[in-house]
Length: 88
Length: 344
Image 1 (cartoon, helix red, strand yellow):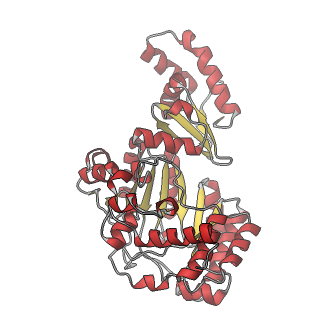
Image 2 (image 1 turned 60 degrees about the vertical axis):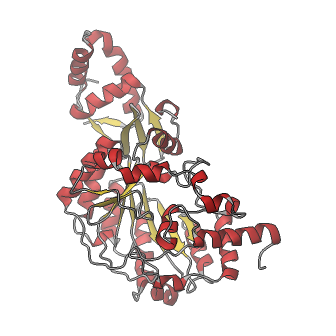
Image 3 (image 1 turned 45 degrees about the vertical axis):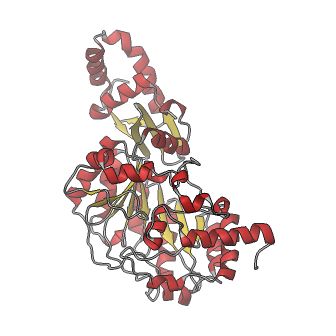
């Protein structure tokens, strides 16, 4: 999962009270991302490339890529499997 | 409430209320309209609305303010050539988009495009399934057929439709057919017993209001349909929770707390929306009003049955802290039904 991603057309989202709220317009189901996941989202949504987002976040947190990669892989997997994002 | 507790759309509103976020903004795109509905609150159908670039700037500002829901209203919004571009831009930023339209201009192609844009809901108005009654109210011959065709196109494209039916003395005996039509098509439905004055204070349209005996039947149906104006956010201390999480921008760029509360809080040409939302003294005053500040309501025996709207109290009774006569009339009708079985 290293490629570029796009936001699915049925998704609405907004940062509310420091958390990202995601709504699937097909079902009106609501998902909330926790603080670190919200941080990932804000970075990712500007570039839609996993590697670049990881690099930006590792610099922001002053950590190595390896230290955060696992967590953000899981998050990306969750977002893709829930059809919030898709590879494009 | 904080964001960690959000599990539903209602939770989002509660979180916005707690944190003073303008989560829902209504944008009037124009006042021009192809119908001339007798009850309409808009005095003149002449404004073509803000330009696309200005609307896009408004959307960008609202994103930064935390807005999630954009409601596009008119006039008739589909008279604008750029309506799909407006919706597309709003969706590209992540907004939920709600559309208020008479539905008459929705052909198959437009419905398909709206479906591809994943709008959240399409709201429209049907007054009667009797063509002559519907056309009499809309002022346009053939309007019912046009609306129904538009809704058929929306349904085919799986778009959520919400049918509203304002009750006037012209359609009071036929609205249940509209309810049946909505039910048959799995559209959300509500009736409204309140026709309100035009926003310039002209109250000539109030002659369309129903008499007190019919009103009891309407209130009974209104409650039966479970479409009481129960606010999404409940707080027994304040007369209106919506003004803590919503704004209305009219087609001239004037900003109000909502389209029923015409107390101007700024214009987009003089201040940013953030400045208006955060610093408007008028808005802060309106948000500070609590039920304990309403002297007439405190001593009113009907308050338990009342759905007072501060905007209507101001518009029709000239006092935002005073009694709303139409709300009181409805409350009396509800009281009669619940305590005496009605028709007193």
